[in-house]
Amino acid sequence: MPSSRNTTPIIYQAAAAPEYLTLPAAATYCGLSADTIRRRIRDGQLPARKTSKQNNARIVIRRSDLEAMLAPIVVADSLS
Image (cartoon, rainbow, N blue to C red; front, side, top):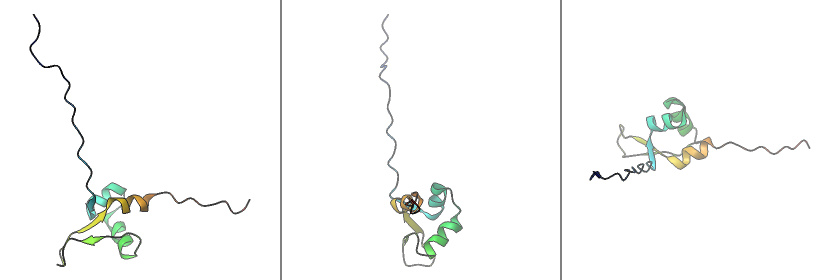
């Protein structure tokens, strides 16, 4: 007797990664501590934004900026 059940596999599409990450999420994404992320923001090595002008506003970081910070630096061999 043929089964009347639908055997089509269900395919789940992964949710798109957010463009901006909070400071704790950015630290987890990079495998660094939140203090290291804060230090790089303070030193101007990593651009970041506050979500409002209040003192307790969240700090958010664009994921592409995090990826650029993590990209390996290629050093040319100048001793050839």
